[in-house]
Length: 174
Image (cartoon, rainbow, N blue to C red):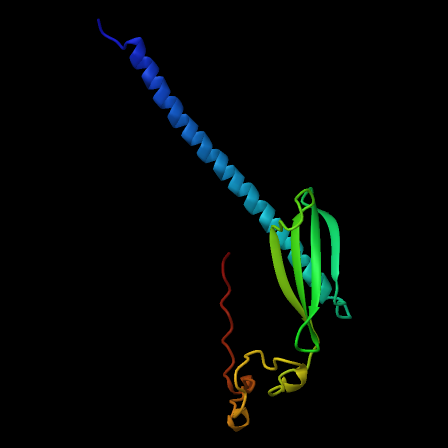
């Protein structure tokens, strides 16, 4: 007699079922990863929006911690903004963390840092002195002696008047 026995058919079905379970688990994991990355991207957008909103204000943000909630992408989000003073008097650091409103505290999906500062020199101006900006000075923390002897190279704006004019562009047939 030709054909498969019942045991052989059952063994084949078990093997196929195990293979299908592995494929389904791989698809499930891929879906979870895509959802996590979507949420993380949205949280990052929200954090960047909060930093940008603070930068667009005419006055620097107060050094404090602010919290808020908002709806974005059909979900409720909770954000925390912590503003701290830096060693430079005219600059403040803004740290924003964002999580889903249903997530517990301390489980931020995205954290973004930004700075709010006012101009401390004229546009295109020369070197700045950071000595009066508070403790820590120039941010490098190293020995600053001997800097007065260093001759600094200045970058001058390009003079385009010496360049020949560009030839006119050829029209395209698009």
